[in-house]
Image (cartoon, rainbow, N blue to C red; front, side):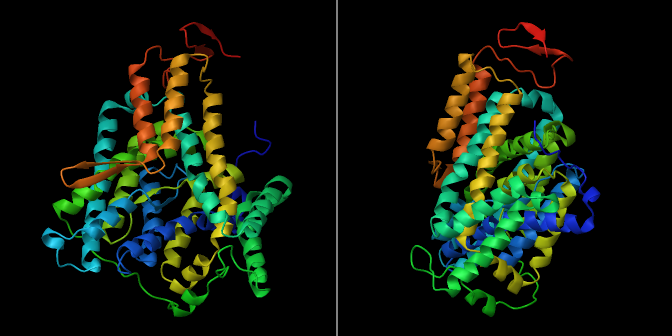
Length: 457
């Protein structure tokens, strides 16, 4: 049992505190969300995705997701990293209509592929709607979803280390501040440890730089140059997507991986909040929300959206599970998209700070997976359960670069999490002696692995 009671309605805390909690979620998603357009810009030689458009798509996509999921699921939709390989492939195309194109002319076609990828979510959502979530979830018991959630957190661990090692003293300060406020904080400070970690460690970064300290590679801790160049206020430079079979075949198949990741993320959020979002509002609705948000983002020249593990970690750490707080973060993202200078200021947050805070956030996600397994009493005395969990964990952590194969002239990469999900689902389906029935336990009874019913104490 948690020693802190979860807060499902943040309005009980008052509007000012709700606004601050929304800010904490905005900071949690910000670094990873703007990193996607930065990386894509590198692929497209400076003519790629725009940060303003990316923030707008994250905010609008999140609000659309909440609308379609009846405002019940506290999920934030940020930029998906799964499509980076697809962007790189489209940028390198030099045949057919792409032969004489500039990089900027290729980008709308990549975004058109994202639109189709998002619409494929609707196909799976329709299937689940028609056959019922109960039949679908027979293939996703806790012995599958628990290890997948664990993999989601642990697969992000190298990113935390990579960021932290740029400046270990700063990363450790951020980590220490989060721990101190979460364990010993009082009142409001106890539920905003991430925000306090960001603010205090950023102040330390400014002081370190003033005294001549640099990052491990000799670079400046904070780069202020981009702030001076950015305008104060401007509209987002939207680009309407374009469609071509080649780009569609590059981008659309990636949705197979992201849909599997989506199911894992919704399972993680459900476990965090102690609610079954897969049944209510339903996996079909969450897929619909994620898919339409992705399609909308691609249509106006933004990256694909995905549910963010960073924000799931904040839910677990703060114990505030109110979706209204997430919607505030979405509104902040939309507002920021109109103010490039402010966005660039937040973007100066050193990687080491993000790394230090990620130590907690990513670890929390894995801990949620462990709790999912424990609370659902997965019987690891049963060898088939051990096999399913073992294959998921090794696949999810071992295929760090995913698995790439070619169909025709198109290169497709399945991420490690997608592979882990596929292998886990298949093994669970074909191995005998399943011991879990979704939503079928009788009150006061628990069906054990050997089929013997015993009283639930």
